[in-house]
Length: 228
Ligand SMILES: *Cc1c(COP(=O)(O)O)cnc(C)c1O
Image 1 (cartoon, rainbow, N blue to C red):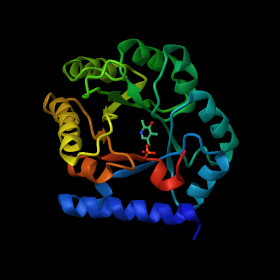
Image 2 (image 1 turned 90 degrees about the vertical axis):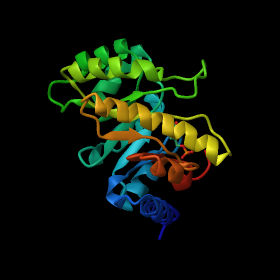
Image 3 (image 1 turned 30 degrees about the vertical axis):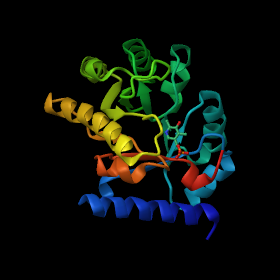
C-alpha cells in the first residue's frame, strides 16, 4: 500500500474508534481530505485509494487542481474551507460543490446569484467563531441563526450546517469546551427547525474529541498527506 493509502486507513480507523467510544455508527462521520498545498498528483493518489471528498483553502490553488483533475470531476466533491472574500465568490460558485466558510450575508447572496443554473445548488455551512478572537473569521454564535435563515432562503444555496475552526489547544478540557460550544449552535439551529445535518469540525489533532462532541464531518490534512 502507498503511504497515502496507509494513512487513509489509519484515519478511518481513528474515526471508527471515536465513533464506537461515542456510541455512534461509523457512517455518521464523513471524512474530508484537506489537500491544500499538495499537488494534483497527491489528490489522485488519495482518489485511487478510495477518497472522494477533498477540501481546499486557497481559491487560485484549488482552481488549478480542479482543472488538472477534470477527468475525475464527476466523481470528486470539492469543498471550499478557506476564508472567502466577496471578489472570489464567482469562481467558487462555479467550481466547488460545498462552501464551509460563509460568515456574512453579502457573500451568501453573491454565491447564490453566481451559482450556475446548470449545477445543483451550492451546499453551504455557516462558519461560527466560538473562540471570540477578533482576528478569526466566522460569525458570532448569537448571529448564526439569522444568517442561517437567510442562507436557507436563497434559491441557489442549500443550507447544510455549521463549521468551526476552534483555536488550537493542547488541553483536552479546553478542546471539549470549545467543540461543545459549536455543537450547541448546531443544536440550536436544529431546534429552531432549520434543515441542518452537517457539523463540520475536527482536524488531525482533535478529530476524536470532535466526534465525541457530535461532529458529522472531519477535515483532515496532516494525518493523511503529511506536514505542509
Ligand atoms: C488546514 C485545515 C484543516 C486540516 O488541518 P490538519 O491539522 O492538517 O488536519 C482543516 N480545516 C481547515 C479550515 C484548514 O484550514
